Length: 198
Ligand SMILES: [Zn+2]
Ligand SMILES: [Zn+2]
Picture (cartoon, rainbow, N blue to C red):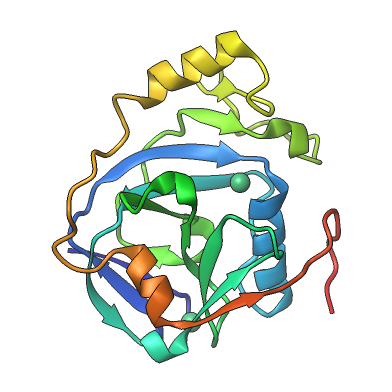
């Protein structure tokens, strides 16, 4: 049983499965802004190009639900993130595309005993990435802008399809159910392109 914990350990979720299905690097503004906002509130400092991992949405045990709060960046946001209210780590992220089968986490922004040696398959939304440093993108990682190139999209789908988790009914509760059960959802109304908050 693996655990995802915030940095102060007051918010923890224990998973029924300790498998990471795949990993991606993400250059998108939402991942970056969510990390920067958490850091502004006292949370961990995000990496420039964030490593995302995906685990089955099946939670066995929850510790400190009262310390968790769900946020969205904007009114039209699709992703919902659970932060710890005490330390502003992000312990998980849901998106409609995950279909309640997996949820995402960013190991840099929380703590986990999952085996993080998995290599990212692709770097996505690199059109949104504002930094020059590309040193984390090795030759075996597919580089994608905004899914605008059919040939590259096909390559991405071919890489991803064997890795995607098949839906199965969770033994515990899903991450989406947890979102419904914690405080929030608070909409932050962050302006796009902004790095400083108040
Ligand atoms: Zn915490
Ligand atoms: Zn992203």
